[in-house]
Image (cartoon, rainbow, N blue to C red; front, top):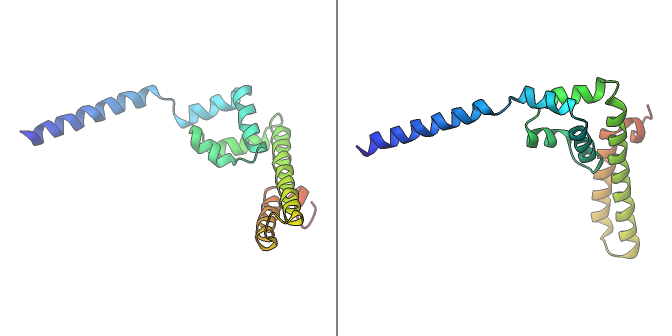
Length: 138
């Protein structure tokens, strides 16, 4: 009898889950809504400009990463905004490097630890914005 109750309970939970899933928009629908909503796009670009990652934003909000990334790089209205957000993120990393350098000079930070952090930030800047910070300026 207890096993039958568990099976019924599981079936009821699954039915409720399926009903809730019908009410939720699909990833494709959510992504289309994001790309049409200027306020949501502004939130996304602010996330990137403040050091966040596009994939993390898409995963958190259940958007299609590849669709959003393609729109940000190919749409004429979004590409300049995305480039500006990437530049702002690179500037943030440059400011972090400057802060680390000042901490080394003032004796607050071990030079070896700072070297590792600075090299990491430089590598990230080169990879994320090669046009601006790459070894070969494009």
